[in-house]
Length: 379
Ligand SMILES: *Cc1c(COP(=O)(O)O)cnc(C)c1O
Image (tube, rainbow, N blue to C red; front, side, top):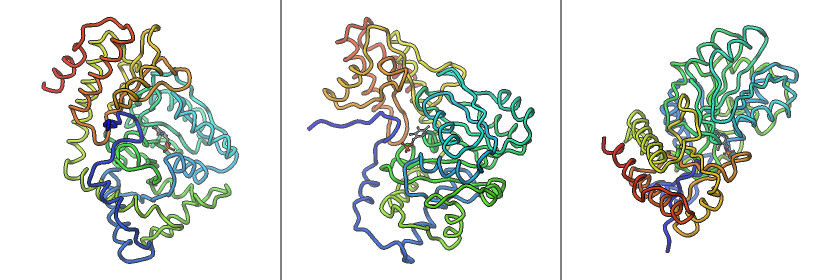
């Protein structure tokens, strides 16, 4: 009988009307009826990606789209830059290794982020770098780079910029065309408020040229095939029919509120969550210079076990936040503010955090976090 409030950075909550769309009987995908769904989905995604580039739908989780980017853009031996500022950035490095690309790995301390100057230095030294792989919101740390500034320096080079926007698309501003981001990858279960199983990738003409030239073996994730199919309003294989239909409902919700309004709402909730953490005597893990509005990573005092905190919140109170990953396991919790989450969900999450922190022996004035959040939310 307990509610299940997801304040997690994926999967996120699925709105009732999207659930309703998911519950419809399945239709066949090689039909004019489904072609209309594809057309609508791609147009809607172009609005959210803020692009006129091609957007392809892939049937996989977000990582599949990351793999598609690496194996289609590069050939074995090609030079690339992979930025590792946390768990998800590491995935770019691993993918480059698997496909035998020659990656210059930029390792950043967790909680901090890469700068345009860092990237520019490498690009200037090596003119034959083909691609730069970065992460919009490093979900393990809550850090976000200045994508616009990075895009500016990549634009002046021979390389393409590839952005993992899996957590962050539809939550924080990504101006794909205005900034010049060649490839943007995302997935269904974060800002788009859908179940996992659908990924999407946008590709610029500069990226398409590399895709045509790649000598990597590709089959399921061959973007040349995705492009050919897209031209006929089709997909190469059986698509995630149900999720695409539900995506159109999610897009309606996003359009109804408006992207810019969404960004403002998430930013306010992020600010409120950070203020609450501080009021509880906790530190935001992420460096103040690069805190993302997608989620808040909070450092815990040594006497508080983050894994236990997270489990009690979830199992006893029905509020799920994420624990720390890898070296941050037990040391941080992460509260997401993306998708169908409103100010009172944040307040509930903070109230629950307070309750469990109190029980675990952390000293603070009960209500301080909620009050701090409320002040921001009502400012
Ligand atoms: C969630 C996430 C991924 C992984 O996506 P999957 O859908 O689990 O494959 C990759 N990158 C970032 C930044 C994420 O937040």
